[in-house]
Length: 132
Image 1 (cartoon, helix red, strand yellow):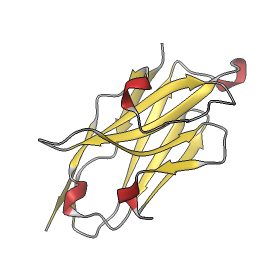
Image 2 (image 1 turned 120 degrees about the vertical axis):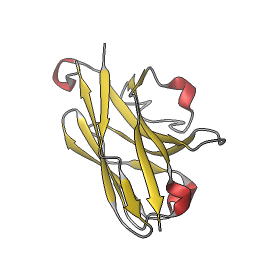
Image 3 (image 1 turned 180 degrees about the vertical axis):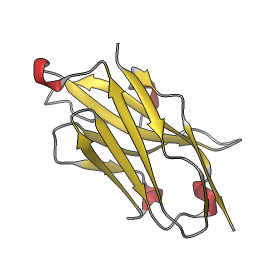
C-alpha cells in the first residue's frame, strides 16, 4: 500500500515562491513493471478540486493545468519523491494542495492526469496561503 506524504506548504507573500514535496513510501520502481503517475491537485474553499501538475516517475514529460502558465514546475527528485516548485504565487493559488498517485504501465503513464477519480492514493494535504 503506497502512502503519500506532502510537505512544504506555508503562508507566503504575493509574488513569492514555495516548493512542495511529496514522498511515496512503500513503493519501489525497481521491482515493478508499473510506475507511479504522481500528481498535485488543489482545492480552495468553495471551489472544486483541480489538477495542478503531474509526471510519470522515470519519464520525461510533465503535465500542467492551464492556470499554471509557466509559474510551476513539477520534477522528480528521487525514486519516490517529487517536487512542485511554485513561483510568482498569486492570491488565487491559496488552497490545500494534495499529492495523488496511481500505478500505471509505460503506455498509460499519466493519461488524463487531471481526473482525480482515477488516483488510488492520496496524501493528507498541505496548506498554501498567499497573502499581501
